[in-house]
Amino acid sequence: MTAPLTQSLPDDINALKALLLKKEQRIDLLEEQIRLLKQKRFGTSSEKSDQQVELFDEAELGDAEAQLLAQEEDESVAAESTTTSAPKAKRGRKPLPADLPRIRIEHDLPDADKVCTCGCRRECIGEETSEQLDIIPAKVQVLVNVRKKYACKQCEGHIAIAPLPPQPIPKSSASPGLLAHIAVAKYQDALPLYRQEAILGRSGIDLPRNTLALWMVKAGQLIQPLINLLQDRLLSYPVLQCDETTVQVLKEPGKDPESTSYMWVRVGGPPTQAIRLYHYADSRRGEVAQQLLMGYQGYVQTDDYAGYNGACAQTGIIQLGCWAHARRKFVEAQKAAGKQKKAGKADVAVSMIAKLYAIEKRAESMSPEARHALRQQESLPQLQAIRAWLDKTLHSTLPKGLLGKALGYLDKNWDKLTVYTDDGRLSIDNNRAENAIRPFVVGRKNWLFSASVAGAAASANLYSLIETARANGLEPYTYLRRVFTELPSAQSLDGIEALLPWQVLEAHGNPLKVAS
Image (cartoon, rainbow, N blue to C red; front, side, top):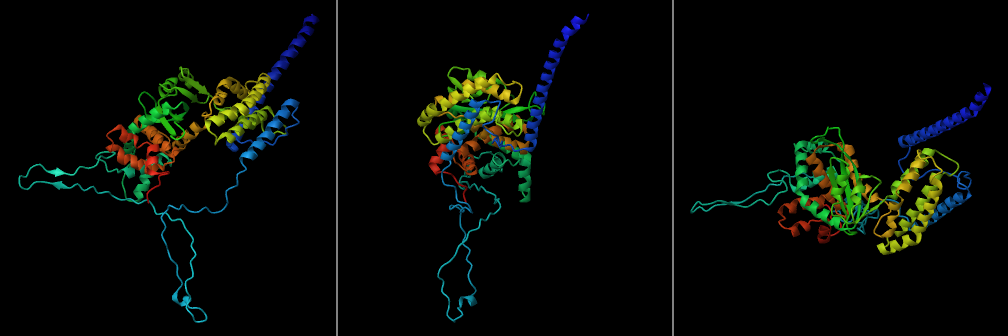
């Protein structure tokens, strides 16, 4: 009777050890998540690593890995020192822009002080000047359109009246300048319409926010021909980046007011014709991506969202990954690990990826051909080193932790992440698209939602035109005022094309400034 009992003890002990190991792993995972949440709640949002770690005494990494990390750190520091050796900008007050109007205010001595102590009259031998910046609040004025009327007194026939030039919103009191002001205030400066209503009210102007919202919808519809031309130009250039973010639309057919819709953004165009296009959709489904990429041939750079996979599976489309997203996951693993005296695997990954970015920093001002050659010479060997380290590390790390997820992301997207070395026109990451969508995200924090589908679609068009103008060096208010003034009169394709940002830039100089 005792033999079976003694034989079962080792099995019970092994089972308990396995259970204890599982619990310890679970505790480690939860503690990691708590550290990351604390860092996100109370720490800095920067992805720059502030970990002070010892690079040479990491028992877990082994000698070869520790040496590799040390080498990467040294090379990154050296590369950074060579790229940042330009003279630093001088500190102190910067001169005021030379194109601003100057008003001369003279300060003279009283007549009594112009007489010297010796009794002679002092003579003016020069002057000293200092400048102050002055701002006058927005000037509000009324444009009175006077249309002359003519009639024949002899026959008392038909009365002729001078026509009113085509208006951006017919039978409206909104001038092109007012529409441009409201659009820029909302879509660039993130000033909601209800705040603009209050600001106008302080000047004695009663413009309800519903009226302002209607004007923005009509303004967004007015510029649709320009948006169509921008889309054609965007899809004709074989390099494109995409991203998307959420938006709430209160009155959307078939959906609850609390439901989530999406604003998509595409970034591309030739180097001298940068284009930023926004598109509103009621979902994040892959069908939307297919619609946005219909007829496109070339490279598409995105994050790891699977909704793009179906669209990018079309013949003629090559999908790129984003190294910024890959690095971000290792940075999160760094932060979740807490302060350590010794370097960990996340530190190795961040350091090795930093070397790729150091190469890109040096290639910024190069031509696409020279950038491609540099990547073939330096980026490819570094990618091979990262791949070798990844193969060694991937299967020795728990997949459920943040480090395991970062390694899994890198392994899963490896082919997409290395495509950028094939063409000098490509970017190492998707940051241009992320930067393009940031103005929308900032605005959303202020105005919170769109009331209708028409409002969301109009917002997409106005964001597109404003951000494209900014990307081409144009001052948005001056550009929109010109568009709202001239587009209603454009009767041909040439007339509409003349209002594209780079055409306006070529015709009127760089950059357009607000008229004084």
